[in-house]
Image (cartoon, rainbow over all chains, first blue to last red; front, top):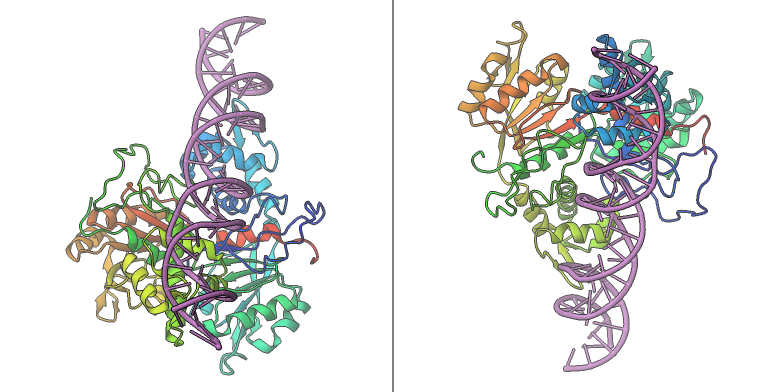
Length: 248
Length: 248
DNA sequence: CCGAAATCGTGCCATATTTCACAATTATCC
DNA sequence: GGATAATTGTGAAATATGGCACGATTTCGG
């Protein structure tokens, strides 16, 4: 569980190396922390826009499943809880998908954004940590079908060796090797805080470039690695600020 | 598990009713969505600053426990992964806590921010949903000691009646009643998406003013209720955008 | 007790993000 | 078929957020 923050969506841009800026400082930053020029430097699309896309896909798919064929930015905005202008602006970063006087085709747009996010394929994921949280994540169906746990690691010698579906829990020492061998690009970190950085380093060494961090550790990662934080406790702790004695 | 978003940190201001603005529109927005003028309208402190405070507390407490008595904004910044200027600015919203030439007292500042966040007391929390996720949350120790699950609800008749510690899982129909009776201000929503809005409404009717939402539903809540989203799937889905064919 | 070094708090500027508002285009209805 | 209504995409303006840079203080080492 947790709040999400981000980190390093600074890179991207397989080609088009916009600026000549070497971005020497940017070590690991992270949204939960700073907020490096994810767009200017990158010349790319603001990360905040990217983070909204999954919600668009979800909502559009839902509407499509309900049989709604097209939707205006205004109606979509009401569903999602944002302004119509924001939706139009966000989409405009990627092209023109709407039809004046009509709106957007739910199915078409959902598919297009899915492709933009590269959700039109399945991603293998490495899960580190097979305690309560790790197990819960492994069993969780919500990541499917785009994400599939392809390898599980745990430092405890009792747990490594344990089976989960067709997988055997492996010792953390094998992370780099296995992540590399299976060409895994995504890691989920659900270990105790003390082991988080080590596990992250091993995953990155093996080729992982996206990490979902369930720990409260501020991970230090190179600029080409994206990190998102899941921090329910922090989310909770920040909400109490707004609670006053009695109601209003 | 999930990414965190926010919603409605627009209110606040027990006293000091800054503007006369009635903020008539602001219905439920939410950061995952829009980002209403959480500071101007409220005259208060930017929500983004509030969301960073838990990280400050965590880090300062850690340092204090290690025996570090004082820390400069620069050093703290390195630990957290933000700029020193941001830390100084964030803190300046609440007062002057540093000592020139020296820095901040770790223990003192940790305590001060804790009090600002109202973490110097225990909050009762209502948990809705006692499936896999709900159970994991109930067992999770990370929320302690500031938060304590004081009531658990589930719509399934098999599950309601079940015991957890000294609690009995109650049917969702009793949410409003029990939340009100126990003066619970915080709710955790871990039910299936179809039941989320109903559960939220019941909690709010009972007096809850802060909701941690583990579902992907965009909750509609009045302006005096804060919502934070936990959305690991969305976080994951947005990271794949940055993954390119081969490495860089 | 003094000068150099450290460090805060903050005015002011730079960037980023959101929103307005409107021309352009398409749909709809009679 | 033409007038009216709906709706997009986007320039420009408004807000919000972040960070530089420096005066003011305080510490520190003789």
